[in-house]
Image (cartoon, rainbow, N blue to C red; front, top):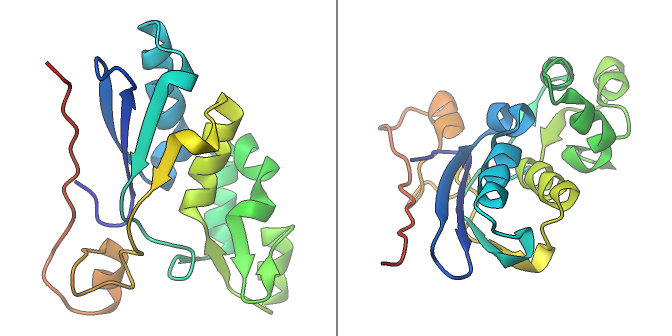
Length: 171
């Protein structure tokens, strides 16, 4: 069940092993994807033998954050990964941001966070081929008629809603 976070559905190509992951920024920086991939490796499944589907989630067009958010990510155990990929993860209206703290201090632009780019960086570092990952769905914030968004609900009154994602192992 997700509202803006990434719903990750991971399976071995033979269908024997499956995993469903709710991956928001906290989970991504804390290693939930790394831990999930490690479980597959422990079962003898090579990363090349995985297929991953990622459902609707919030996109950077609607994920405005502060410099404090960037600092909060850096302060987490996986913050070094955020620092390495900051140009891919943080954007301003004028494009990628090389130093989110300096950009926010200038007050010239707000920052937008790219949750997908964060997951892509994690997959790439782990050795998952981009062709093994299928990105599905629209921005949850931009699609109020059919998708739930926690962040949108904090900006506009609306009933609580979310998406269900599931995966089933072949018998």
